[in-house]
Length: 173
Image (cartoon, rainbow, N blue to C red):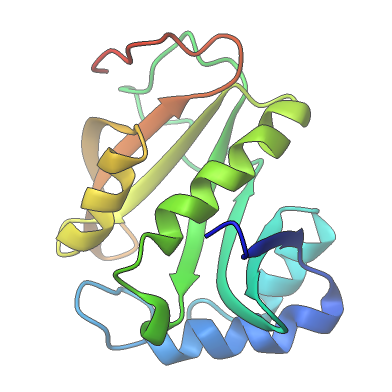
């Protein structure tokens, strides 16, 4: 996996990222549709310097948003010791690369940049009908914290401490 290259996406990669997202609509556990995610989401993620892409040679094989948000701060079960969390969302791996640990590798490679940017934790929502994604997050060190119902779906919520404040053994939320 060391041959894969991680980069921040630029506007010139927006169409290729959208093609990955579109290809995953209808996959088991995927809540995406023609209405979400849309090009405006990708362009905003790029403008916020928060869209990461993983390359295999010249092709983008995976993409993920990891950046600032206050969208879920109203949820009361997050670990209060995480003072500056970021959100993980819109993570997608090309179908032909799935099952190879690419999503886990993408998360692992992004975390040092998040710490450099001043984040001390990552929070995410995963649809309850997506056990494969949940397995990836648990294998990446995320801890289950609670659940919520928004966007017409039931979600399990996970978080992870990152950086110097991250304890060697993560505690349960």
